[in-house]
Length: 532
Image 1 (tube, one colour):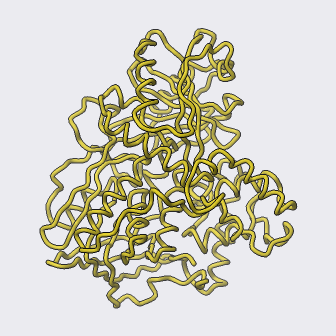
Image 2 (spheres, rainbow, N blue to C red):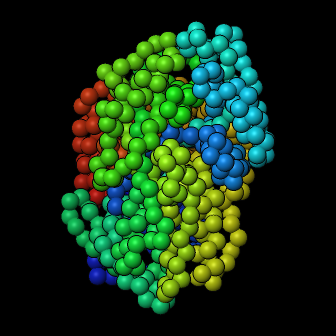
């Protein structure tokens, strides 16, 4: 194993790094493209100006879904593509994804029942559905999910989609890319581009523990996967704005103490035509979202507005017996979605499909515009097909038949067994490590899958995990996150690699930051750039 704190940037500021593809942007699209290309034998360097998935990709509704509401906008192709990907993804990483059943109470003042039935009939049949149960109508008074709703809602519908830990999905794609040979540099910004007939030269600026350093990279192809900043990167690279405009839309979510005890989620209709989800979250909470608000500001400083919080509370109160107010919100998050401008009248009606901007006027440039988390793998595959062809390195796609790191619960071939038998796998983990508390074993199983054995290597009791830096957070886990998952600060650990920030008492972030700083100092490094 490589030195845990060795940086691939150690070649020096004046050295020229060589690669086939430079990927700008460490969100889900950039990480997915880097993974696919690395698996095809390409030399890939991915740079991200902040942490992996720090922006849009960790601020989603956490769903792997076809997009039921997109049927109303006649986006049948997008829904079919997303539904097909839904099951591919669920089989690739059963530790960070799982099926989820949604209850839609019927509001007679909104969409008529016949229209919902027709939509769900189509939703069930637009793509193959191997193991998810079909939709059905239900009497809410007799259904487990009906008790949390107001008595006025008597009938409803139930259908299937999937849940994903979005931030961990980004990290696992980057980890797979890295283990297939890619270099992944976080806190590294592209500051300049030069285009030549056969290659790009880029200058990267890296923030290493408060010290600035730069390096130059020569790449045969540039991939612009900068999300909300994609238009800016395209302009910096070519000197011209992209031909297809992006529409920046802010989506916000709130988290409140648990409003129901069961495992179902809800999809609610609003009088303005929008829909909002309410889902079980982190055991003790309910996640409610999302809004769709046109955004004109700086994506680095996006935050929920008071009007958005009030909107989500109002919609929840329309349906739930237990009423909530803004004061009940324990956490909120917002992200800016870069949607394709399609002249839709409202932000909620704007397409969630993607476009790959292909530019061969000189060294190849591929720009990613739009997209949604469910179709990221398909997007990455299409992007990699074009890049490989442009570089004369045509190799077939492979990710549809591969699991993500930790997802090989029952072998390296993806399949529904891991999805359907995850609890059985967790039970086996507990029997292998009977000294491990059940709640910790489950959390680690959900986060790391089979990689939990790397974290547990050599441990035979709790004391072997090292200091308990915060309740339930041991030194062994922090060391793993720093060495293998690019975690550089307490926020990375508490809000992206996990959601422990919701559960731990005040002051824990300081203790975690102090431990991480001491670990870096002991290793003789000012910052962690590249994992082992």
